[in-house]
Length: 325
Image 1: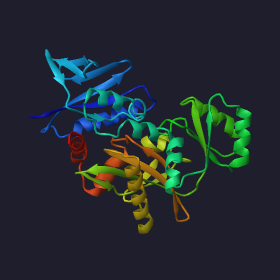
Image 2: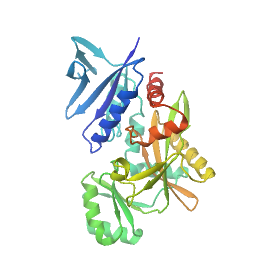
Image 3: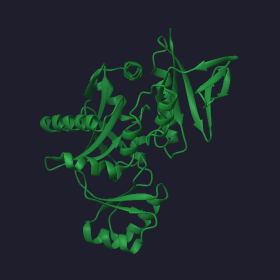
Image 4: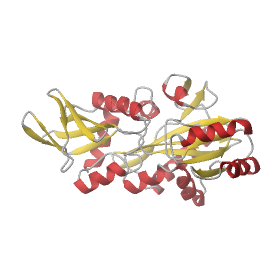
């Protein structure tokens, strides 16, 4: 009998538009001969199932809905939501209480990796390198913060929200005169920001996933951004060239894949993830960890899966198979 799969997309974060693209790609390519696929959108306080019969509200008491006068229950969830409430673990907590399996990491892993600063702090003792950074809260004294940056870091620096993705609210700051504007922009997206040293080098990213019960690192992608950094336009509007497999030293590539796999296992990941690095002078620094990577046509993990030899149908179906075990 076919399993009923809910593909969750949308949500309240700035990344909702990207999530809708990811969710549609998953619905298009998930194996329809093996699964009944339902797109479930988070729209404000409503969870809405899109079906041929129209748009039906989800009953959150048991995660079900009525379709053609029949109560539909879901066997598993494919999470395609970027940002809250998935990448911070809130949604997973709900499904844990409902006893419904899902294809991504659990509450603890999601809540930790959504916090860029705490992720760096957690991984540093294990030898994972990252950029030197200063964190700040929204109510911190701006003059004291500026003085800290000027004393402890060298320009240029990056300012970015601590809990956000897709480079929303992120800025590259070349001079101290630009700092205040960048700080204000970062706080538009989160109440905590990170101000990091700029590491000039080769930016790469590595997808890691559990495939047929085994953790594997996918081929690395090299990011060649036409923008000043890998910003939203570079990620989603074609303002970059993404080379998969990356044209980098083979030994470094292997080390990055091993480190990405180590991070995946150390953080107790499940499903698919993507870990970003930058290479400088033969050393590589972790930039951030993505617990629900983009799956749209422009996204990187689908490119890497193709280079590994996986179709999108195989990639997505495996993700559901793993969570149903």
